[in-house]
Length: 259
Image (cartoon, rainbow, N blue to C red):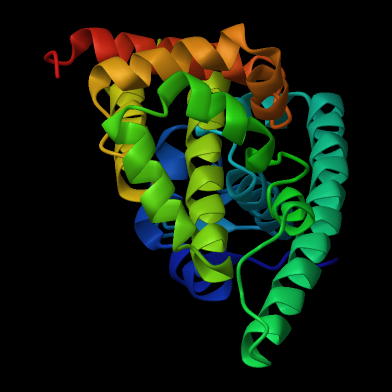
């Protein structure tokens, strides 16, 4: 008779680096219920449980909320489909990351050799996945050239080298991930959770470009859905993201004091 190996919750925590508290929570919400119990009624995990835990952690790493993971675990075919889609997206990200790495290394080499470190248009497009901010420069100058926001943005970005642009992009991608998580979970645009992300988005603009008021953020939110160039760029992450992101920021701006 084959003996089935079991692991206690403490052993699973040590093996997987998942906290005991998290394992207990997964058990409580029915996401990962241990398949066995000891004579003293302690939780015991099987190899199948550990395989399920690995899938849960993989989905979490990909940004899926627990409610969606539970649904996918109940439907293996959908779970496989979701993983296939994520694999495709990750392959694309790897390709883009390699291109960005090559651009940064080129800039680093130029900086270290004394040839300068400001990015040209092609390097900027590589860093931002084909989105070239320079193509909007004349239009931005015509629309906002006399404003304090335009002056601040021009003054700040003029000083940015590869490190600053890379950090700016990383923070922007983190915001995108948070918006996607909200959208996937069906969080209403006017909820406190959504307002927190919109507030961080305003802080992002204020940190990197200009002191963004609620009214300015409302204007940006409208531009994301009214200008197909911005809609197309935002929706690279997920179709419908531009509309959802716009509604979140607009709802936040409506709840903010004027100024």
